[in-house]
Image (cartoon, rainbow, N blue to C red; front, side, top):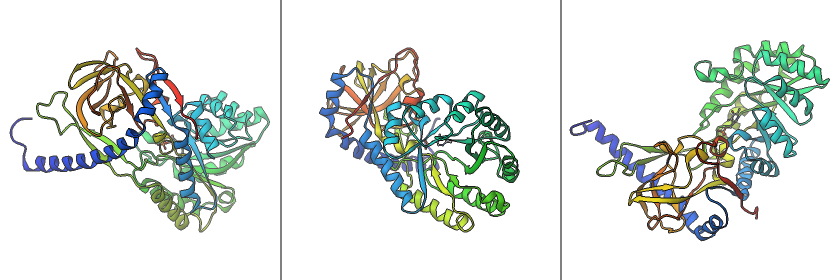
Amino acid sequence: MTGAPDRRQSADLSRLMREDADCRKKARDLVRKFLDRAAELEGIARQESVPLYLFEPAVLRDRARSFLDAFRQRLPAFEAFFAVKCNNHPQVAAEAVRSGLGLDVSSGLELKLALETGCRRILFSGPGKTEEELDLAAAHHERVTVLMDSFGELDRLTNAAQRAAVEITSGVRLTTQEEGLWRKFGIPLSDLETFLDRAAGCPGVLLRGLQFHTSWNLTPEAQTGFIRRLGDVWRDLDPVHGNRLEFLDIGGGYWPRDGEWLLTEEIRSPGGGSGVRGSRCLEAASIEDFAREISRTLHDRIFPFSSPAVYAEPGRWIVNDAMHIMIRVADRKADDLVVTDAGTNIVGWERYETDYVPVINLSRPSLDEHPCLIAGSLCTPHDVWGWSYFGDGIEPGDVLLLPGQGAYTLSLRQQFIKPSAAFIQLPAQ
Ligand SMILES: *Cc1c(COP(=O)(O)O)cnc(C)c1O
């Protein structure tokens, strides 16, 4: 782009700069919490091999309690199931279970992990379950509720129940978007009555509930919108079917309170190049807001004619703040360019090309943020941790912390060029 920016562009730029200032303030507030613990955390890095995932069970326990409290204040029968795909470390799942959550799994692999924690309440959802996976669910039918994804899966689950000679509690997933990529999940609402009819004739399959899931929810609107659509259909169901429905699973997708932190390329430091990128923090509703709006909609649209228990499947909200990443500076190539010992293969995707996260230099703690390309050591330029760091300088051997990286990092890790990272669990207190 050449020439002077037009008025619209400069208005955009000043909005972005304002958003950037708000975001930097939020980032500083987060950094401040870790500066008090810098020496303790750096000490852990000195004892253990870095890179590492640092898991804080006390934080997970706190989030689980807040989540359950928010919904249980408003809903008489409410259960939450931690979505294992969000962070699939066995110690994380075990802590979720100790914190009063069930587990939501999406494959035979995850189901085995959940069974090994001793969890008594497991939801098995997801499309395209194999016969082996359904057999495993049938073998543990006292602990597993299968959330079916299609008419074909109803047939396959019926066969699995018959092979094992058991009765399997189940639900069916409803499609929330009939167009585009999300249509692969569940059955359309318009097919619900037919599905319930069909299931009533399937021996061994006890269809007891409905599930839907929407993702990336900064506000409860996607969830309340679908509950309204569902209410219109549920109200008109044949009571023979409607009366059998004992649970409604409203899925996951709750965004953590700090909101979504994104990088913007529009703001560059003078000279551009590897200069500091701008950041933008999108607001997220509090979990109390989610609980209030969702339960209000349930009271208006479902409870007048049915009283199902309500289930939720939070992943990100529970674990995001409970795990951090620690890496070490391996090389300093310029004042504004360092290379770390770890590559982003330990998070499995190019997350920090789009997401902003404060990089905290635990070895030289400070609230001052400096522009600097923090690159990983993989042989690809897309291996980036950030465009700035908080600290009083940065040198080889320094330990860097990326706080709040518990969701969709460890479970997507790859053994690509470099090995993965160690996992350290802090004492539960
Ligand atoms: C991914 C997923 C979740 C968890 O989503 P979060 O955004 O981590 O809360 C819950 N339920 C289902 C069916 C999912 O696919």
